[in-house]
Length: 113
Length: 115
Image 1 (cartoon, rainbow over the protein chains, first blue to last red):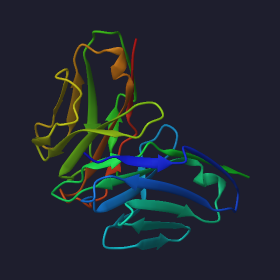
Image 2 (cartoon, each protein chain N blue to C red):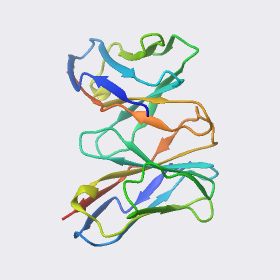
Image 3 (cartoon, chains in turn orange, cyan):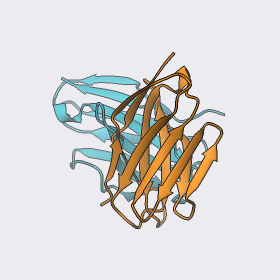
Image 4 (cartoon, rainbow over the protein chains, first blue to last red):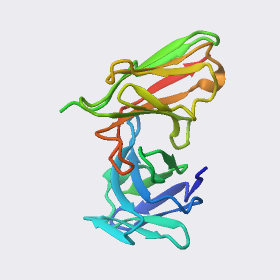
């Protein structure tokens, strides 16, 4: 089955700096890569996603890049704000009906004011 | 509109007790997923429903775990004879269709503690 590795496990940045989280996946058939933000006591919330036919996607301060050859993808958050502090999960899903995702182990991001 | 809701939010059980966890998905959503999230880890897939049909239960850890969605809306995850290793947050998610790229909307989870 699919295996998703995520680094780093914790990340502290100063407010206004950028944060980068990196993930690798094992199954070359995976074609959909969502990123989730989980705040304390809440369920994960989708913040951005990318499909395998696209190399990069941007939404305001958040961007994702995908390298299919190397089987890795990254989340970039620019101009970080204290409210960006949370746990971020990458995930991978392969085609064929419903979305059966495999999650990474998470990155706890702390933005220091 | 209302999101995915789960109840109870917290459950403490003694080892050997049976528990039932409820999920109310977003109205009209076809797909429903259950995940188990251990402390400090990412969610792990347990089972998937398309309407009332349980199409994938490959992630259920043992035959003590049972899920149902009899009318294609509310779902219940039941754990029989709970063990300490069952302690985790159980998340429910729903999506509008059964497409591999539909957004999954997660509930807040039920934190189960087995003593």
